[in-house]
Length: 137
Image (cartoon, rainbow, N blue to C red; front, top):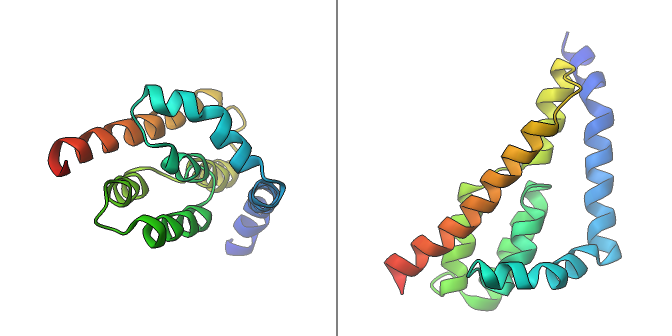
C-alpha cells in the first residue's frame, strides 16, 4: 500500500522539485519579483519580501532559504524580518500540498482549489505585513 502511494505521488513531486530548481537557476524568481514589485508596493508589502511570497507557495525548503537570507541581511528584529517570519508561518506550500494530496487521491480537476489557495496565500502576505505595521511600528 505504501509503495503504491509513493509511486502515484512521485511523478508530481519530481516535476515540482525540477520546476523549483529551474525557477531558481534561471533567474525567473528575480524577474517575477521585478515584475510584481508594483503590485507589492500597491499592497504595502516591502519589495524585499517578494521572493519569499513567490517561492513560499511552491517550495518549503526554498522559502526557508529565502527567509534565512532575509534574516541575515535585515535581522530578525527589523520590520522586514518580522514580516518575513509572519509570512513564512502563515502561508502554505500550496503546490506541494496539492501535488501530494491530489496525487494520492487521484483528483484531476483542481482549478478552483489552486485559485482559492493562492488567494489565501496573498491575503496572508498582505495581512501579515499590516499586522506587523500595527503592532511593531
